[in-house]
Image 1 (cartoon, one colour):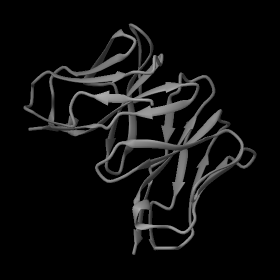
Image 2 (cartoon, helix red, strand yellow):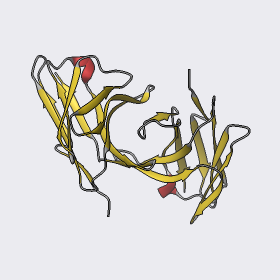
Image 3 (tube, helix red, strand yellow):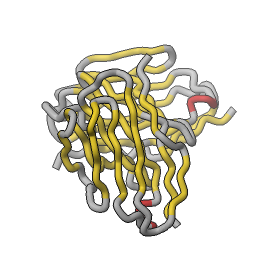
Image 4 (cartoon, one colour):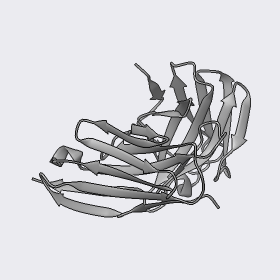
Length: 110
Length: 110
């Protein structure tokens, strides 16, 4: 079964801290998404990766295809970063169907 | 700018009612999806469609049907709503792996 494992499930940080969320998957993929969902809000795709690293503002996403692992880093975290972060993968020719991790609930305190 | 809209943000229905959830995208995407999101279970795929009048079951299709008569519109139908269908329902469209989510419909079945 194609699986996506995300850790940690819950993460609490103080404002300014460096944050890392991890994602592992079981078989080869065509791409990986990092998604963000604020409380009561819709889901936004932060990054789509198939190799290497991407950066947007204080957010950095990396992927290691050989190790089947991806990380999402947040530098200088802020209370507005508090959200659920979800890793989701695309397997091959799947019409864009995603398989999701369970999500990481991030709370950043001022 | 990409836009996926859903017909309602909040909906309250009675057990046994027929419920229609509508999703519209303005990007001419071929692939569209219906997910439900539940605490502890994450996001699960109900149905998806890869073209007009084409549909495939996802992981949890029981109790649901879908309709895609036009490319921009994908409807989710609960034939006879039950309390265990109380959930957050999210629509998405996809193109070349990119994922675009609607704001979600929070459905309460009494």
